[in-house]
Image (tube, rainbow, N blue to C red; front, top):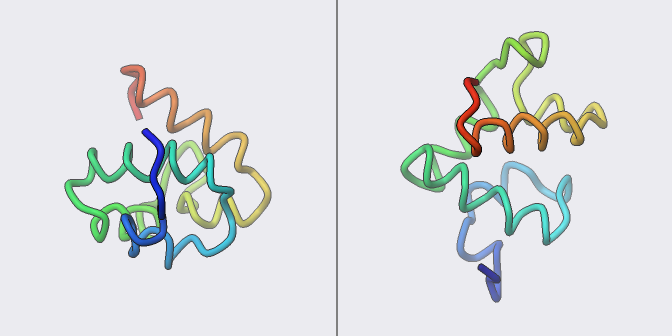
Length: 85
C-alpha cells in the first residue's frame, strides 16, 4: 500500500528512525511492525529498545545505525514469512 505521507501516518516510528530509511523501506516495514506491535508508538519503542540476540544484543535501531540495514530487513522478512525471531 502506498501512503501519501508515511511520516504523518506513523509519526512515532518516523521520529525515532529519522532519515535512516528511504520512503520505500518505510512503506514496507512501518505498517508491518506496527501491526505486530499494536500501534505506531509501541512499534517505535520496540525499534529503539528491544535488544535482539541475532544482532549481538543490539536494538534494531542501533544495528541500522551501524550500516547493517541489509541484515535488519532480512530479519524483518524472516519474521514476516513465519520464521522465529
